[in-house]
Amino acid sequence: ASTVLTGIKPTGTPHLGNFVGAIKPALALAGTASNALYFVADFHALNAIHDAQKLQSLVHEVAATWLALGLDPEKVIFYRQSDVPEIFELSWILSCFTAKGLMNRAHAYKAAVAKNMESRAGASGAAGVEDSDDLDAGINMGLYGYPVLMAADILLFKTNVVPVGKDQVQHIEIARDIAQRFNAIYGPTLVLPEARISAETAVIPGLDGRKMSKSYDNTIALFLPPEKLRKTIFKYKTDSSPPSEPKDPNTSPLFHLYREFATPEEAEALRGRYQSGIGWGEAKEAVFDVLNRALEEPRRRYADLMANPARVDALLLEGAQRARALASPTLHEVRRAVGAR
Ligand code: TYM
Image 1 (cartoon, rainbow, N blue to C red):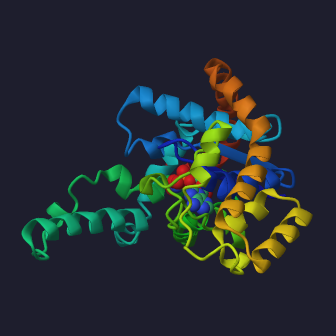
Image 2 (cartoon, rainbow, N blue to C red; image 1 turned 135 degrees about the vertical axis):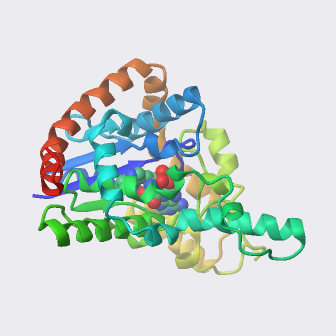
């Protein structure tokens, strides 16, 4: 018996990196797990999005994306994080077992500090003196404590496996650390989760070659109309080698994307084209063809779901009730362990 869980933060329109890195593997795993819990991490997004309407519409976009791509709410417990208050109670308890130093080393926090450091160096012409207040400018406690909330998401359901992209691995290691610390004091209570990352899709590159990310503005949104999708794929940065020159499919992000959506026979055929020499235009056209084929149906379903937010909301609420029923015994176990009622 195993429990699989993963979440997506509604801070922007879901993109190809989310689909290939997390949604696709998660949906494949759902069939084999005894419990699958997938959710929209809206209170994680709250550290960045301070506009109620925007947050709500992003929640709908992310939820509709999961459903359009094939999530079956009969088989998967599908919910909005903020509908499950047990998570936030556990988050507080866990924060009392989390070393502050551990949070200082979290990637997102370090990146925010580094950005402040950079802009200060730029302003004064030199790296300035130590001034922690200044370096924490614009950073709220929600960003700082983000990994604790994520640990609560995971540990509350005694999760075994967390399918994610590589950028989330540190967070899952932090969740393990926190669980270990808790168990060392109170005895075996929390289950240590494992990240599940598939080698090929650990990091889907964006249009500029860096990790595809909302914060780099290099994403391919999933449900663009076909012509727009094609135009966006053609923006992928490629080198200036001529079409006749052989190309290595194994190091080409375009080939990796192609293989993700092609049949094995199609992938082999295109591999041959790369090796004998392919123009980047042809390589991009090929990616568009398979991607558009895979997204045609989901695109239609997505439009339907977005036209019916009340239905999506009702589904999420139903899922939250099931999630709460599962969460309640663990939370009680934890409460009793620490000495609460
Ligand atoms: P988020 O919303 O940034 O991303 C959602 C999922 O998509 C994956 N991903 C990628 N995978 C491969 N290549 C890429 N370019 C790429 N970009 C994004 C991410 O790795 C992630 O799996 N903190 C999480 C949300 C979260 C969560 C959780 C996840 C909250 N609680 C509990 C798992 C378990 C986040 O911000 O993901």
